[in-house]
Image 1 (tube, helix red, strand yellow):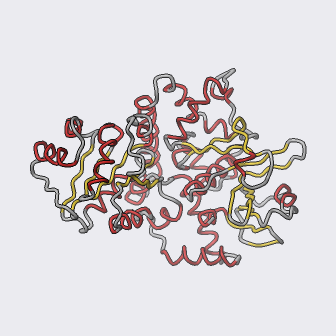
Image 2 (image 1 turned 180 degrees about the vertical axis):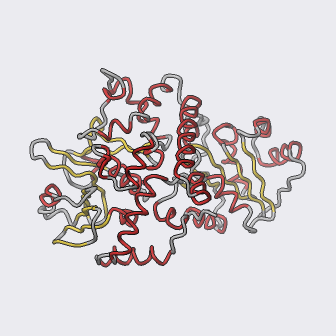
Image 3 (image 1 turned 90 degrees about the horizontal axis):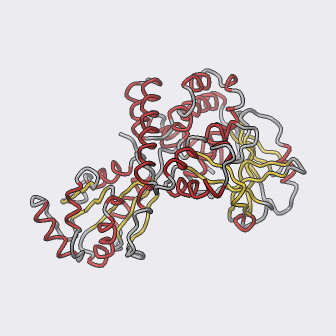
Length: 434
């Protein structure tokens, strides 16, 4: 059974005294439904009632009239007569809620009533684009969910949690990882790149140990995403959003990883495709990483929205946009991947940092030839991050660290940990601790 860190947050919600409803957000198939069901069946709630508006569209009728809780309870008794609402002991789960705008509106009244715990879940593909005019602002709190992080992936494939604790201690203390552990972790990291974090894919791998079967399932999910984009995107964005999403490999294979509309379509422009990029970000399918003109906090004050890089949210799905031979080469050495290697590892780190809720920026100065893959705001100041798929020199990071305003920086490498002045070199897999 896959263990998710979000499960602990769901338990805290179940035990809290607040009356607000919880909305679990995230891309399709990242495990939202499974985690809420796990909470509902853990024994905390004698009554667990689940509605899936995609699977049972007729149940939208429950929310077709007045939305006060007493009326809704009466409607439930008509359509689901065997389900009992017990005050203080019932968890109501409204799944795929983006399919029923009236159910979204009803969250305000469930929260005001306060007798029952209510969790709603829905794909980000639709939840913000079918938002009713009377959205329950102030009556809900949100829990964002992504595919499995690298640490969750390690636990899923049977890696002892004590090993992760050893790695965390090495990270915080700045110590090298024992060589045998380091070599094994680099193998696990390549496995994570190939498998990714989609729960169904990870479970399939643990059950079958088959890369070919997991690759087939990943490509099926990508096809599902094509259908979902066609279903949920506004009519004016359907084809454009799909083209932008599936252009990711070509965008990141370039020496310059800046997103270029001309890659999507010859003579493509921001005017034509810009809103499609925004839609993909809101659907939680991509992470936008804008450039900054100045390395100074707060970074958003110096961001350039016209100059950005676009990264996937799941590294395994991204790799499945390539031919299967790329996975084979990665897992057997990786040196033959060629130009794609830098983009793949950069996308990996972007996924790992985004899973840790970081807002990402990058810096590139064509005059000084300085380039930093990622910059992050922190309480200490701006933290620069340079990503090296190998263990090459970090000229840009070394130059940036000369500034007194930059407290320290990270060089992510395939080698082991070490420290030189303000530069912390850490293995690529330690990005899970940033």
